[in-house]
Amino acid sequence: MKQLIALAHRIDWVTDKFAGVAKWAVILSCFISALNAFVRYLFDYSSNGWLEIQWYLFAGCVMMGAAQVLRVNEHVRVDVIYGTLQSKARVYIDLFGLVFFLLPAMIYFAYLCMPLFMSMFISKEMSSNAGGLIRWPAMMMLPLGFFLVGIQGISEIIKRVGWLTHAYDMDIHYERPLQ
Image (cartoon, rainbow, N blue to C red; front, side, top):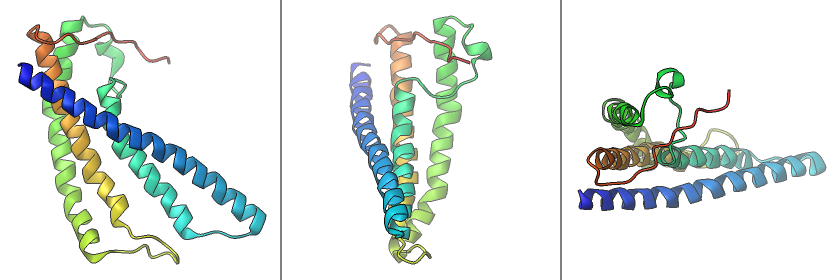
């Protein structure tokens, strides 16, 4: 179990690094958006490339940051039952959801988007907008994000099994979100 927990910590480290990139993508996207608006209103100039880079960065933020949301336990869940249960029951529910819903969904989504990404990458598909960007970097965020969430799901499974077997001490405190 020690080796699996070490693997979970390595996955958490990778997730943290991609979350750092996602944080910078948000900041950069906001900066580009503000600068683009400033230039558009002050100089009456706009570029499709600047507009597209904003949604490329947003795709990066969402897809590279999703695994971190899972890692810090801030993902969406149904609180009607979950919040009333004891810690051990919550861990079992988490395990069930991770094994039977999250992992199969991430594998399926990656399977669906990979051919589209590869097609765009090989053909070097460009935006149909004048001055637009190549599309494969934005499309690459989909398989990358699904992969990151999938491996973070494996890390969460390892940590929960470790907690259940008393091999890993995990903070399982749960706070219901404000309504």
